[in-house]
Amino acid sequence: MIALPFLLPAYALFLLFLVWPALEALWLSLHRENLFGRGREWVGLGNFQEVLARPEFWKSALLTLKFALVVAPLELVLGLLAALLVYRPYPGVAFFRTLFFLTTAVPTAVAAVAWGWFLHPVGGWANRALAGLGLPPQPWLTSPDLALYTLGVITAWSGVGFTAILLTAGLQNIPEEVLEAATVDGASPWTRFFRITLPLLSPTLFLVGLLVVLKSLTAFGQIHLLTRGGPAESTMVWIYRVYQDAFFNFQVPLAAAEAFLLFLVLLLLAALQFWLLGRRVHYAA
Image 1 (cartoon, rainbow, N blue to C red):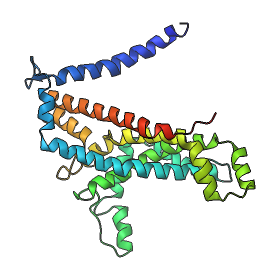
Image 2 (cartoon, rainbow, N blue to C red; image 1 turned 90 degrees about the horizontal axis):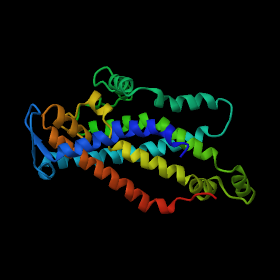
Image 3 (cartoon, rainbow, N blue to C red; image 1 turned 120 degrees about the vertical axis):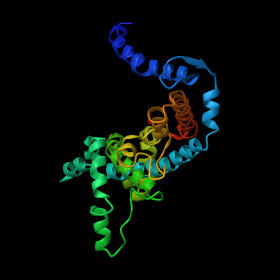
Image 4 (cartoon, rainbow, N blue to C red; image 1 turned 60 degrees about the vertical axis):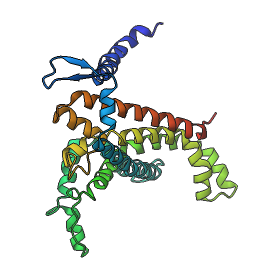
């Protein structure tokens, strides 16, 4: 009870900026508005039925799944490799820590501009490097076949720093005595990693995996700044479909229904991860 007055401001901000807008969006998704927002008509689940009947909605859902399948594994693997390289002290480790964690400090807009310049189809360094190797230039962000996967790599790169920070903290909490005892017993580095390090790191890996999956399903900034859902809607992922329907097609109730469906999917995925992987997490006593 003593802490309650100190927590009230945080609770008030949480209710004002998270709970209230979410409830307002749900209420809006159950109505139909005219173009100017003057007057609402109750339609119940009509907007949800209309959304689920649209082929473009299911296309966006499939694109979101493909995008997440690129971002989540790549970011986790790169983040774990970076953490393994810098969690122990050695000469020059501060430089590599700064290098890996720099992606966390770079704003999304700045990173998008830099990547857009780097991947420019004519003067970008990526195609210059390919030309130096005798390979043809690639339309990284202008090809419907490449744009989604290119954005996936960019998104994974932008999250490696944060992922590495969390995994580094998890690795540094593993008792050195356990690894030293395994070394004395003749365990190889691979055996120590897969039989000791990974099981003891599993709580952190579980948390990071959950955050990475949810983040990959709601990535917006890179897509908006680099492709705007194109070319030919090849990067029109779920969250960007919500944005387009709300602010360009002026179908705000439909966009609210799409946003609430995305919320339900995120909630279901989080529950599935807890159910499927949570029981396999090893929490040290």
